[in-house]
Length: 388
Image 1 (cartoon, rainbow, N blue to C red):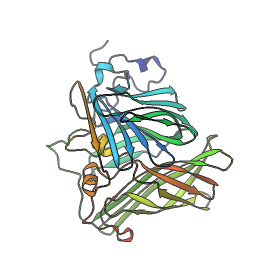
Image 2: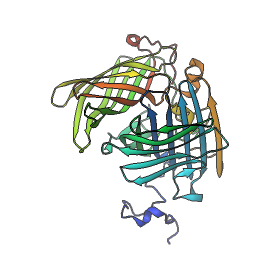
Image 3: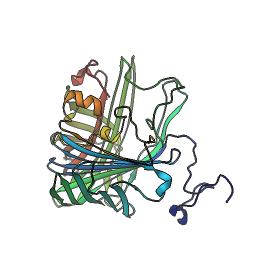
Image 4: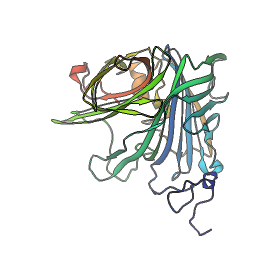
């Protein structure tokens, strides 16, 4: 072995190499390089949800993850971090594990019984549509120089089966009563580890700047029992007279066909106290010029807050941060809807919503992630109540 070459790992047996390097190394030296999975499964009545995410940070020698259960206003979360090189081929940390059973078809998510929180679960994701690659997420810092993100992500929608335990009470996850979504991303990612102290500060809220974001994979079911999926992503920025909109979306069929959405008008409504999504509509214009309105309605307070999995940071901690060769911790939040609590754990969460798509003849359920920052007078949101 030439000095500087990476060690061999299990992935090196596969015919999947893209660069002259082992799979232990990535092409970039940027310490923000991340490979990440985020998934959830929820009951269709919105009473219970499980969530799991893992991240691999090759240039930090860190592997971390979270496992959560959301029940109404409550959330239990187990967080773990370990040294990546100790078990480079294992996609697990402590009780949290991610297993590919059949690529792009069946995935297993597990949280074993543990000492940190009284939760455990085992759910298997089964796809109803093929995975779909989203537009590349590429952005620069406000100065226009540093590349802050450059990553690819695919999402997939499916059914779920298995079980979940909370405080000793077991609930069956039945595929006809639950649904599941997952995404997998890799590349240079924002908010990984502690912010460098020797460069110009970035981040935080800027007076006069408003931003809103929504992302949602949706499972739709027709009256004959057949399924299809809808995905959308919508971003809108307003700043000192400047406006920018970015969007993508598609209707995804089980045979792999895609009907692309050309434009989206987001008419979602939010609770002004904690900025949780209430409902509303996504008014879509398809590539063929036809109109298609998809309506959504919140099914209650259930929805895993990703901030408790260290998204956007939590109490000064960030995903990808070195903690120890192995570190585990747990946290219980009694009321995630409390405005003060929401400001600590951030807006973004896997909100469980009901969906209607009259044009496609489908009724269904979705994981709707939203963040609304700054003043949006037409939504009843002012700058004083804004938070990330």
